[in-house]
Length: 296
Ligand code: MN
Ligand code: MN
Image (tube, rainbow, N blue to C red):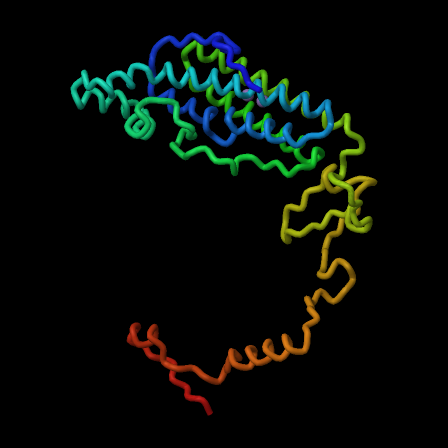
């Protein structure tokens, strides 16, 4: 169950309303790296998790992400307060109001006009939140890695938001949120490595002859060697020729007699005849008709 606590997880002080900044903050409210995506990612993973340690951790972090959603949403709400009142009450001259919503690079018209200065579940560009932001696959050795990457991306978005904010109270709250994503990343990484082995993911072993091979697939100058393709672990293949399995590289499929018959029938009907070169619409339109060779 969830119980709401009226206090925020972190104290937020906003100096003054700023609808443009509110709009940018929406990135962490309803964006792909935002708090709703994080909360739903870990909440749904927790529901299906059977390991008691991981389940508890996922619920703790999911619930904290909901608290973060409340913090960032409260920031958006407060930054929109002035504009919301002005939009609703129409007390300013039209031009003034228009300027306050769109001036100085302020791109908040969608959230202001369509959503009335509220806290819509969109990203900063007005794109509605989507469950497609969550890439859970139901295997902890893959999902924990994805969670680590999700926390890394959230950290970076917060860093960018901190860099564009001059409000010290918002900067302070964003630094808290950014730091918590680092802490989550650490927990997920520890949880990943408390599960041994965790690489490769899943249960099936890899095919040995292709596991430690590096195929140099790009031709021309500039082949680089480094730990990603060099050293005792790696076999570097300069000119990987198809097929790397030693076969002839030709695809083949066995067809039943009936299937084979219709495939051949279709191939016959759609066969191209290189001896035909008629005048086409393009030839006629160009005024330089060059085709016209009739079938012999
Ligand atoms: Mn968070
Ligand atoms: Mn997090």
